[in-house]
Amino acid sequence: MALLAPSSPSALHQVVAKVLPRVRRARDLDDAESERRRILRWQSTLPDALPTRLVPGFERRFTLEVDRSAGWPVYVFSPRGRRVRRTVLYGHGGGYMAPIDPFHVLHAASLARRLDARIVMPDYPLAPTHTWRDSRDDLVDLAVAWAEHADCTGEKPLVLAGDSAGGGLVLAIAQAMRDRVRRDGSGPTAGAMVLHAPWVDLTSTAPGTEEFSARDPWLFLGKIRLYAQWWAGAEPVERPEVSPGLGDLSDLPPALMFHGTLDTLAPACRVLAERAEAAGWQLTSIEERDLLHVYSIFPLLPEARRAMRRTLDFLA
Image (cartoon, rainbow, N blue to C red; front, side, top):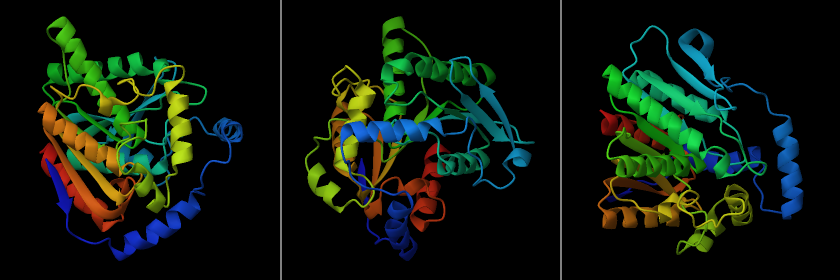
């Protein structure tokens, strides 16, 4: 089901749409080799810790554990002094080459407080050094383990959530969990999904992508296509593990998706909604006119607060 929100962008969103791309130094690709060197240099400077600086008093308000059994960190946090009622496995965005951002933690912390939830946030290995093959099985095992935990403890079913690349990641995880059930005849699955402008088609061939990209002040097709090649590695980008929006969408958990039309990925989100309806997948798609990529995870925006209310209603 696709819903078009009728309102115009708020004044604050209009400011953010101008300022954020400048702050993030958004620009299109110069050349592939220079971009690879730039990303590797930047990644070498990144701290090995959850970036909590946008959440005041995080250490006091949340418990935090770090699971490194897969060879890379999985951050698990929940509100102190409150009974955990469910788990949200959150896939962070960043084109598969950028790490967890403070805004991801801020959004996830808000979910944790409002849902009495445990957040599981994998810091999965990044391109260009790594491809999807380096983390897929571990990520699916992680989701299965937490879904089994919910079944055993009586907590509410696992929620898979993510933004941009992370949205595509959790959709691929949901498909893999479904495929295990089909193969084995039983097994745990997620109860629901929340997708924020998910990057689900790494071919960038959805009708209208070029036109939407021309208006997008933040995302650029040259970089998107390069990052897609990095993540796919030697495999075709059409593979459902890489582009889950092109895969089988039947028998998936009910899902809620947010995206704006000031977003290069909007056409692919529209195609996902159409393919979901054809497959019988219960996906509610909320499209907001002239809103930025992943606007729905920036909590100061009125549009993001509206998205949070919808999310809480959906997960109630």
